Amino acid sequence: MSLSSALVLLLLLFGGAIALYLFSARRYQSSDTVADSYDQWTDDGILEYYWGEHIHLGHYGSPPQNKEFVTAKIDFVHEMVRWGGLSNLPPGTTVLDVGCGIGGSSRILAKDYGFAVTGVTISPQQVRRAQELTPESVPAEFKVDDAMNLSFPDGSFDVVWSVEAGPHMPDKAVFAQELLRVLKPGGTLVVADWNQRDDRQKPLNAWERPVMRQLLDQWAHPEFSSIEGFSELLEATGYVEGKVITDDWTQQTLPSWFDTIWQGIVRPQGWVSAGLSGFVKSVREVPTLLLMRLAFGAGLCRFGMFRAQRAHAKKHPSREDAAETAQV
Image 1 (spheres, rainbow, N blue to C red):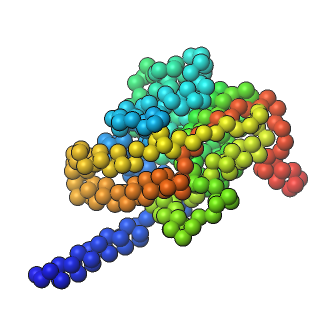
Image 2: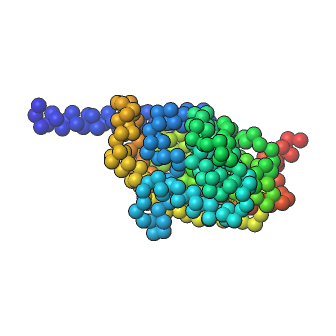
Image 3: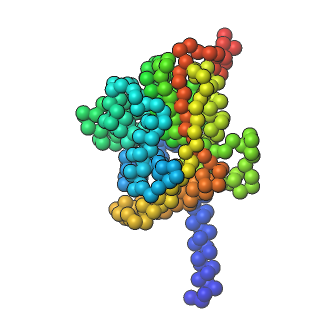
């Protein structure tokens, strides 16, 4: 084969790979597409092999330091506890972990802090795996539930906790409403999430729009909110005492994206054991991970932290309350 023929073949293969990546995207269609995606990742075990029990980014310090990948994830939970003001709460404090994955955060909250934790996820397979990983002595239970319509009564929990679940929610206002609705008056909400830059202040430019489109389409995200926008939605529920406290942990979590790829290189057993399908599935995630690193590194995306206290009396009607009143 001549050099020119080899280059043509290489370009065709590269073009085919790009086309396959674009046309096999896991676009959000409903909560079922989110559940199906997480069910598949849980069934084949690849995500757990590389990410451990924590399906979220790690905390590498400020400024970031070299850390083992799974250690950084465990550190993230403890840093979030401290930032959220939860470390002084007594044993037996009731916590709802919304979007609990396979229960990594829930188990730390239960074992290390003595909290009584209920973890909910839209994925039945994640619930099954969370239950398998949780000893009977750990006060954490798990169930399938929809964060857009939580099955718990108003004021059920002392703390509501959520990590990286928001991008999957099609209506951020309803998500905000539900998080605060199930929180007891005086209770604490602590949320960590992927956010995009507030495009009301600085619209997305020509290269940012297609990048954001892929970040949404590849991992079943209907949309990202901004830190500013989601704070406003939380306060608009009428449930918040005072103001929502926010922070930006982009730099503390940024090494996670390259670390994820590096884990697949130095520990190939995860995808090798899954055969050809596991290899293809793992490799096709690399472009999205690189796009995530680009977006967070360039300021298109930000890692937002949110803390709020539920008021003892609702300040004003939420959007849903107002709509119901208008119908009456």
